[in-house]
Amino acid sequence: MKALLLAAALTLCAAAAQAADWRPLDPENGLVIDTSKGRIIVELVPEVAPAHVARIKELARAGFYDGQLFHRVIGDFMAQTGDPTATGEGGSQLPDLKQEFLFKRSGSTPITVVARTGAFEVGYIKSLPVLTQSEDLMVMKADGAVDGFGLFCPGVAGMARAGSPDSANSQFFFMRQVNSNLDTKYTPWGKVVSGLEVVRSLQVGEPPAAPDKMTKVQVLADIPAAQRPSVELLDPKGAAFKALIKKNDVANSFDHAICGFELPVKVTGG
Image (cartoon, rainbow, N blue to C red; front, side, top):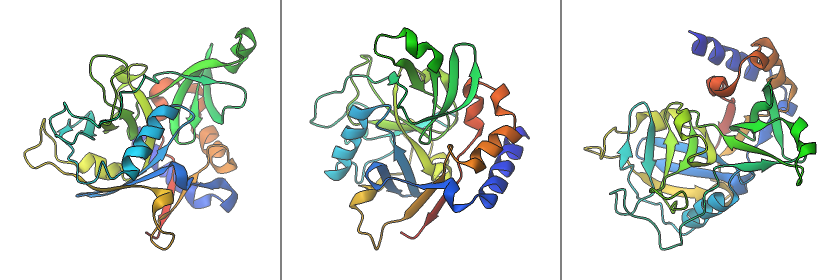
């Protein structure tokens, strides 16, 4: 019931929002994934995982992901893809990546804090829900930056890996539900801003009997203007979103409670 009320509040908030409350999805940091079940649009967040975002964009631009299967889909957990062998053992010819489980938050980090407790704060970097140390601790740090990490809420995109923390390569997954056990153990690099229902509709199995696939994966900027979808997100820094936070008393909630809030999105064209 609480989730339904929050969703209704978000819908009302979006309807009442003014033009200034919306922000466009940066085409260079948007990923459009057409699948056998529909379209998924992801916002890439290089502020949190620059090397992983660069890898996803490089492989997408090379056509590496086109036609690849969702080879491992667990109902209340996640949907995994990005393996050309569809066995869970494959990857690209590029070197493995060093983990980016944590990121540094400085005074210039574009974060919107929505809840505070003790020495920690929860909020958004773009559309990605994050938890960081309090900004009050920055003065105690030699580099003026505190540690933070992405929260594995529904729709968060994370990099799959083997046993070594530094073994991520090309495989990735989309969260279907919240799972805090992945926090600080896997690298989050983006957030589904449109198409979470598609992620949740993918055929389940390890592997699925009839797996769904990614038919085409493109960086939004690479799609010709006439065919490119227009994507706008309700800006956490805007008045409409702040009114929603105040109305629902989110400041008194914490940690993965933020997972119950989906930022409204407007997608047209394409």
